[in-house]
Image (cartoon, rainbow, N blue to C red; front, side):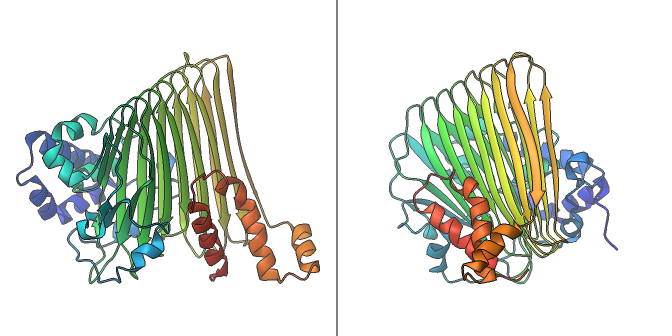
Length: 442
């Protein structure tokens, strides 16, 4: 019988890893220990969300609550040459590699950092740039009251910190590779990431999350982003975890006037994955674009949840998520756009489309608009359907085998959102991922 996710289950989770919390507290600055303690108490009070929580009613966490993980699980040995195969084909330039949430300096490389750019692990930044970390922690939207943000705060030990001085521009993309590698006991890790960009700064961050093991593990990641006036961040993420993994990721971004946040998420792995993004458009003419492509099969749950808050006038947001589901997989899209009373001339567009390859697959879409201004242009929508029989018949009548015809139609369906990724080398990687997924079992 499944264990219900409750506040008491949250307390039991904290007690299970009490030794890890004590080790984190040893030698920590008072402000850091206070922050971690506050996170632990918040999670103790909230516990794991259940399907009775509106934001989680399509995403049950039973398997996660029941899981027996280890914060100190040693990584299983893996062939280091495989790292090149899961990145984007370039020689290592600016790349940090984390295994089970901890930086592996021997696998990382920082060769092409432009002037005015710092890239550190969270643990390094706590030692060398504590004021930067203290000022940035906990300021992103979406963190307050979020159970997994609180859990992350209680156990955060590593992650990455990217700091861009005003006007700094990264000539080469910055790659972050996350590797899950369990051995005797499945690992759990809670990375905390910070991106602080000064006025006019530009950067591209590519994250790749993979599992180089067979079995379960749990990743609870929080990323906080603060963009100054006119700053631009392109943030691309490929989530291709082990099929038994739990991947929960929360991103909160604050944008000053004229700033631009461009996010793309490709989700294909994990027993359960949830990518949740909160964006506050705080300055005039700030804009964001959130795009995603997701693939699910078997009994996977793939959840994309977004919240965009138009705080100031003349801000704009565009969202497009497209997914393909097979077997008994469930896709979840929850998107809310809020327009504040002063945010006149807002433009907010949102769309989720799903392609169902099985009569057992399902998509739960919940788009929302909350508008408190008069002069706005906002829309939202959601569609779900099957492969077009006419198009499939046309391709087969031209001598194309059924499996190949289905692959071509799936790729054509996803092309619109894949085309939004304007990064050399990444499109080919995504196309290969889609082709590999199509060749796998339902």
